[in-house]
Image (cartoon, rainbow, N blue to C red; front, top):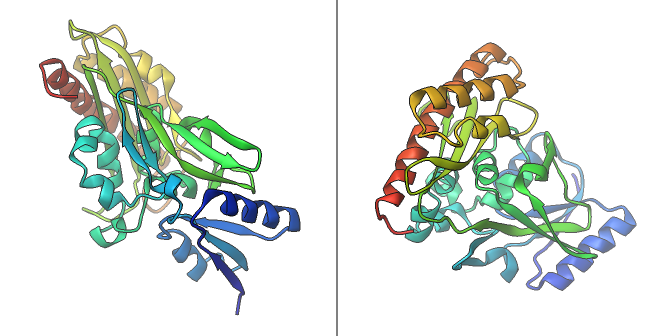
Length: 298
């Protein structure tokens, strides 16, 4: 039987000291935010001994603040708790929709956006939404804190930029202004509780005339990690976001995709689907941005 250690500190300092000690001694550590991925991995493919460091009791990872300039969401806040927050749903509907897609209601009582990000799956639903919303990840370690863009946080399949003595505190997103809208859509073979075959997140900001002045589009499950497709967003800037504009953005997503073929879909199929999802998510985000322009509260 494999030997596991468990620690659940209530202060950040001791948690970082423990990570540093394990890194120096060569002991393996794994962060437990929600545990919905970690527990499955321990029971199936990864049974090697380690220290499980539960961060759910750290105040920094449970912090939720909606300020006048930005929004901070702690890495260990369960999705169910976030999904029940009407202000978040109003400000960042696309991001909250992506969190609501992770598992069943019971799973969402444990699963967190921070944990989904750190699991670093190419098909992680919240990752494209974080990237499209220009989220900045706040990381704490022995050398202090640092920020990393969500687009740069995942570096490969199951791999993040975190060093062995670091942990994710949460992420910070600029508070949306009037004329902002975002959306996330994925395609799955089943009606629910499945892994994305392809996913797209779109954010955009319109000026008072309804012209797009900024847009970011991110794709998931069609490369070794979720990708920011800058050229897709640029296709919408300066336009009124017509169907033809969304079609051009979708084509850029297809061109940027690096999918594989497996039993859930061929590479060619994924390239086609990602363009369709881009057009549909873009239309939803545009509708939300227009509603914001017309006076809906932000």
